[in-house]
Image 1 (tube, rainbow, N blue to C red):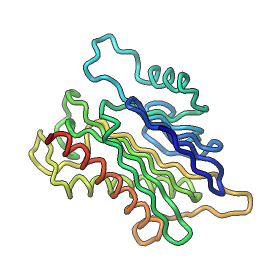
Image 2 (image 1 turned 30 degrees about the horizontal axis):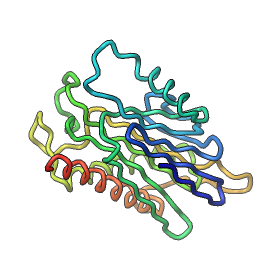
Image 3 (image 1 turned 30 degrees about the vertical axis):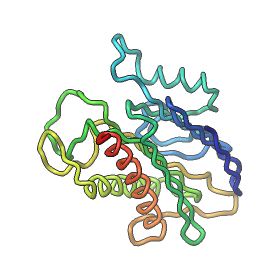
Image 4 (image 1 turned 90 degrees about the vertical axis):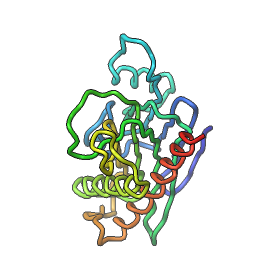
Length: 231
């Protein structure tokens, strides 16, 4: 399934299949992420969240290589910011919200078999659960504000997990994520005669927007997972 959205920043294309979700931007936009492929602070023209088979026998190629090959096969424009998960793409949660002149969108896929609490003892990776999140902001941010947006995103994810009363299997205490979560904050380039927001904490409208849109998308995705596990 492919969707196209046109706004004053150009056409944004979203694709959703059983094996991946992908987002194509009208031009390279600033991104801050923990992605395997082209992670860190930079720019991205597309994003890929790829589902892999957790039961595939070894040897396993490097994750970055797998993501790069799949991005090329899908003809995603470069640079591509790529994440990987064993979670079902049926877990996709999506939310869009506007407050005054600010707009944000959020996509979340979730698996919950690898839940952990911050500070749990380090252990070998033994599960396939991953919560991957894309937060697309339709307003420019300074680099520092993008880092603050990533904080707000993470706090909203933790809130959704706590609200769902999910526990870490190691400590039997409230979980805060999984052992392999990956997140990205994307915003448009600063326009020639515009200004970038310098703050997006909880006392700002941008912070409220981020918290609400991420919380909604996370709640949807977690709900999909819990219903699938119960069926």
